[in-house]
Image (cartoon, rainbow, N blue to C red):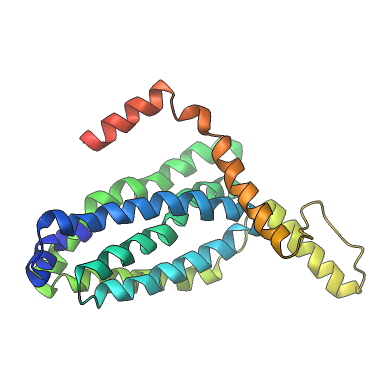
Length: 229
């Protein structure tokens, strides 16, 4: 919906349209980077924790954009908002596959993709009405309200990632019996710098696996086609 408020932002801060549209660019950069980092960590700490933290920080980062006194605040806020908001796009398919059988997985992912495909279509339309009647800042306030609702619902969601579920079950057994010998193969016993190194290894590994597809003909054709439409 950001693009619907471009004209209002341009007039208020007396900057060019190209400068205002940098807010879209910085948001996409943050989206790409956050998708790489945070979605990879969800494979270690579980999806639910990453979801809650990401949605909470995404909502908080809307505030500086909505209250911005200059264009620089908007550009920076949009970047970090995209960084934490990208988790939902990158990790949500994993959650769908966690809870669906193989025979229904394609159908479930198709329903999920309706949101990602229709969001960029409906967003500017809804944002246009908001900007026309309430002003460009209310675009961010509406997004903040929707984020608050999403966060409230997210708290009610249960963890779906199998290794995280096994770790939780192990901790429950340890607390119930007082026996620390209960363990699972997904337990993390690293401390300090070892945790940082493990997380970095996970992020690097998450990029090594799909790297052969980066230069595949289908990826190149899709990368050319999508910006054109």
